[in-house]
Amino acid sequence: MKRGLIALSPLMVFVILYLVTSIVAGDFYRMPITVAFLAASVYAVCIGRGTLKSRVDTFSRGAGNSQIMLMIWIFMLSGVFANSAKVMGSVDATVQLMLTLLPSHMLLAGLFMAACFVSLSIGTSVGTIVALTPIAAGVAGQTGSDVAMVTAAVVGGSFFGDNLSFISDTTIVATQTQGCRMSDKFRVNSFIVLPAAFIILMLYVVLGSDMNAPADAGTADFWLVLPYIAVLATAMLGINVMAVLTLGIVLTGMVGLFTGAFANVYSWMQAMGEGIVSMGELIIITMLAGGLLETVKQMGGIDFIITSLTRHITGKRKAELVIGALVSVVNLCTASNTVAIITVADIARQIGRRFHLDPRKCASLLDTFSCTVQGLVPYGAQLLMAAGLASISPVSIIPHLYYPMAIGMAALLAIIFRYPRRYS
Image (tube, rainbow, N blue to C red; front, side, top):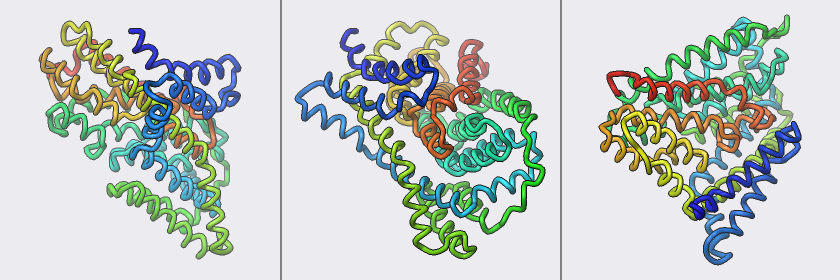
């Protein structure tokens, strides 16, 4: 017990330094998240096992693993695309188009539905956030709405597809490890989360009822909107997000030079450079988080969590609750829903077999609870990305993330009331 708590203590240090300090100060900008992560990381290295060199190597391995580096590539490309598009006027043009096509009271619900549809099509929450967050921030600016709330509508909708899409990595991992077909998991998952999605959609209709677009939204220039249309279209075709962003970057340069939005190639390059620099803090946070979590894992923190939660299981309902708790807690420690599912998948399958749980529901619970937690952790890739693109604090988005909260509640109710009956 003592060793397990020591292994998890770096996470506690981060929580105390960042969340508690920010709450006491009444301002989440007073304590820089990078400082909190750095302090927790230094502490983790100090209490780690082995020589100082081996502890630093463990931290560095986590900070520079392939998943972290992939995220950093995506962050840099998204920064280049987002800033290039912003400088040349694509964001303003796209916002003008939305204000023209949708009535003001449907803008918030429309953004949520767009995020749901895009994420379901491309199977990735990050790709959806990259494509839609700049537009959401622009809509908030034009309508005088809370940027955090409008951004949260996109982030929440992005987890609709992350949870349900047939090509989502979480769906693939959950179904393969639990031994069921994707179509069966989709069916069970739909029973659980679709009512929640409808309720949140209606909530956004109500919350957006007082949004007021400018009387004269202006006329959208199609050429300036083209990069976003291309990004959305190619993303929905299932093309890799890095290829999608690269195409978007090339198009912003071509269109910007053609329309005169960029005076010359050098002004385009300047915009790209500023975009990379704008992602600097996000990249540092990602690497520090990766190193910190790898150190916690190496010290046995995750094994301690799994052992503690599976010690006293009795009955189907408690077995399902433990599976949900397992993937949730591990997700908090890894900040990756896919990694969390992979980590606990084998023990979840063993629990399922022992207590005769339907593998289709086990897969659904793994996916849904992991998406709930991933949608709410301020150091997860999705919230960091959205916050970076919208120029706000990731913590400021969390109170408005109604959809991740709703699907977590729906999954909990599905366990308590043994729903859907056919799969319980």
